[in-house]
Image (tube, rainbow, N blue to C red; front, top):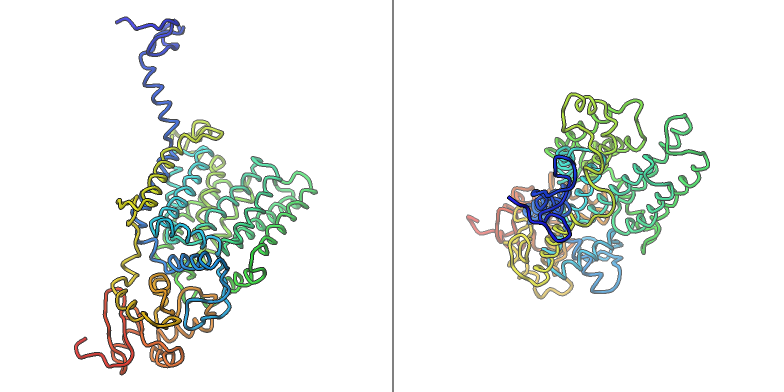
Length: 551
């Protein structure tokens, strides 16, 4: 068969060194090679990771992401600030502490959540949350690939890090802390490895200003920077390997730590904001009363996943000891220690450990031992083979198209499964949606809002769905304080009859409680309380009459 030739002498199907003598000649496989080249430009491992995470979280997070009560009241806080054009400085939601001093710690992302909610309801909030999480862990995968990990290993490490963090996947400002701590730690690793100069660390300061106005987790960033800098200084003083070439570099590094800490004051509330942070961090009550703050070993099954990932990190760390050790690689140990005291820190350990694994991988002795014995999965791959250098937006085109498609469907209110309007909803297992008609009917026509007694789990639900009700309690723990929270927990477990005193003090005549709780058992038999309706998620009682027989 004769190969067609173009007028310029090249083969119509390609021209390359396909002849036996090595000279250029016709190459019938060229079209498929060109197609493969363009396919690699548009779809790489990172593309697969993003699309996979994004779609799975949209499916799973449809209602589970809104199971946390704070996921709903943050939206309402932002909406109030946008509507009034003023920052909130007193509690607008409760009948117990209404009008007391209270500031929204995360005022900036709360305004952002309110804007998203105005544009597309809970669907837009879910879309933004899922996109942030998918983008974060795709970036983690990219760094692992750039370090030379096989795609299977990079994806496995990413999946483990996500699994150890998934219990905090809610549309809350905490996700901003997770992303910014990952970026901060990556900058520290890059400086220690010589990939960025010292001046590159000073980008942390403006980022910390933003972080201060987003979430109290900026304290985690400050602590991480301080630990790393202290480690570098100690290493320099004892003569160990360190990124500090000269002693005069200590001055800008110490200045960096001070500047990062001072960003805590760059906020519209001044000293009030850091005072609230430290009151929560130093609370001895929260670890006893709230699952989110409980010790690691009291939080199963989440603890099992965190411990499993901790073993992977520990195995890698042992593999680089003692000669190849870097200070930044020890930072995840600090976060693991904090996770032992509070499961809330687990995602911060996971993201720093995943990034540290990428840096450690080329120096792990047992990895090199496996590669020498022919295990290609543990063979160190050239960075260019793993992921090309420079800005390459090709692999981002498919994810961008998916996100924009979902955004357009939601903005135009097109009902469509997964991507469109009407997909996201409150978690039916923790949200008493069935009782909304009764709750709204009771609150109608009550000037100033009607007080209601409720379990803490329902506080955010009531704030979001029934703005005319004034809640008894929610998870804004800094508002209620340790002593009051202890009194509530004691009443719930041992003295539910205290609800009678509270009813007289705060003026509520409705109670929304968990089925089978101490309050439910008390109210079901208490004189003067009538059962309005019982559902699998919640029970509503009305004060003023005895429950009819048989209800």
